[in-house]
View (cartoon, rainbow, N blue to C red):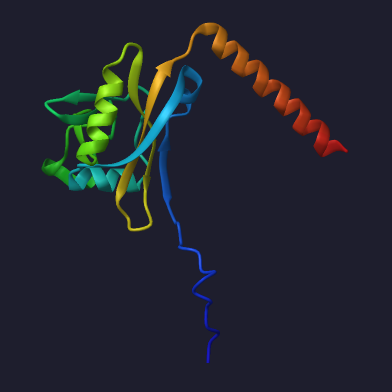
Length: 163
């Protein structure tokens, strides 16, 4: 017989398959709040995402007619899809609850705020998710200060490793 697991100490399995990350977003923006939301995709887009082919570099989210759309996300065509392929840079609808949509849309309309996709991944159930961030643009001096802080931290880590 196998061992029984203690249900109180059992942790849920959080297996996520990382597809893409917008690393420049954390450099260019202050991330105020984040929200995980679903995305409406076609079959050939999902196949292309499973191959890891996506670019979030120039992507942002736009509120249009009470819905939120991902704009500028480049998912290249899936070669084996033939004539059933998708348009690589089409607008894709993001799925979120009405309350979350209202909250994020109101904040996004404020001056200097924008909705930026930070990460795209498949969750443990195999569903594609987008981590959307409510961001405010950084000034040049903020970017320099963050770079200086990062370099200092890297030097401290290096010194601690050498001890």
